[in-house]
Length: 171
Image 1: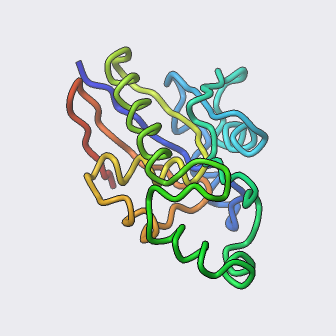
Image 2: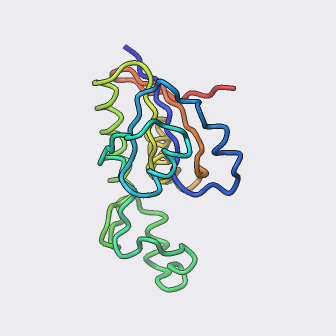
């Protein structure tokens, strides 16, 4: 009745050793990944057996017209909106998804996967999505999202049972 879920944060690692330690770590596990080239690349670096099924719910945070822009550039160009984005989890004036909507989407996916699967699953997802999962699982207020750093190819482990989620640390 338990699912052991490992989330791998997509992105370009600064340290090549990070990718090396993942090789073979998830042999025999079921796997899914988010859409996009970063998730595909991280999946390959982790040594997951292709083709890894794509789960549309593992899509990166939709930041609308702000997608791909640096936060410092945004803060200089639109200081009031940038400040509101960092303090109001319902803010979506950029034309995309609010932080609260991202966290709700992550929570729905977790509930669904906990109800349907048992055993071991590894999921490769964008960093913001992984951060949202940590907040949802730990019951952290949405603003706690901004206090989390999840590096590329970091692994976050969870234990899921119907109606229960727990973060899991291992040595």
